[in-house]
Length: 320
Ligand code: FAD
Image (cartoon, rainbow, N blue to C red):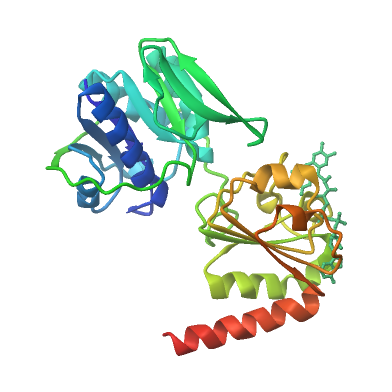
């Protein structure tokens, strides 16, 4: 009756959230007096999981699962849960896991809590702390079903090293043909996706037009960041909708969020306030974003951003 964690990977490599969900699963397993089993899908080297408290890996290798498909992935996790007799399943709250979680909940007849930010405050009844109203409040939710699914928010719980003995087992669940073909829409290209990025460089209407995005992309490249934008920017067709962040766009929980020429409307802030450090570049000292910022630069983006790129390149060259 181990706690089961689905550890997400991309092209064979674990995402950081995989290690965070493993850390979380270890805490829940300790509370319950049991062990942690991870299910991995086409991950290359699973040994790192032993550093984060995972006792057993069910290793799934199947080229039909190379592309994310919510139905199929939910099938795999369901079969892993049935095999282990699991009562608590830990997922992340990534876009992919949020697609598969409701399907999994139906298959396992389980209750599901998303956007969980802390270890259960109680096991009986099973109670978790979650964000609510686009991160403006917290609530404590009880899951009363026999099987429980917890979706952990990125960067909320943290990574905790906890070395244990790890056993690996090849696991070959049956993969039924899925009628509905759901694919991940996190990435519009091969660039770093907003959901996985540690750093996000985001541009708003202050950049005047799509022709000025070269400097945003260059800054993102120097920093190894993903690019994002405000809603009007994607509505105007300056950038793809996959980059729109905010209340009606994607949530961002990066370590660093750099907002350039974005006013800081409440609907924009709602999507990014889970980010740790916010830097704002805006030529209007009264822009509301400065109130939410950790660091602010009052200045013209067309002067500040090229200088920032230059300094970062110098810094990287000196520290290469
Ligand atoms: P603007 O408000 O036009 O701000 C541009 C900023 O750029 C200004 O602060 C200006 O001072 C600055 N600027 C101008 N020139 C320069 C320069 N040369 N250098 C530096 N700075 C400069 N918005 C979202 O982003 N995401 C959402 O999910 C979202 N959902 C919404 C949902 C609803 C129901 C509604 C009603 C609105 C929503 N909005 C959303 C829209 C939101 O209210 C704002 O209108 C929008 O965020 C403003 O975008 P912006 O800051 O890019 O543009």
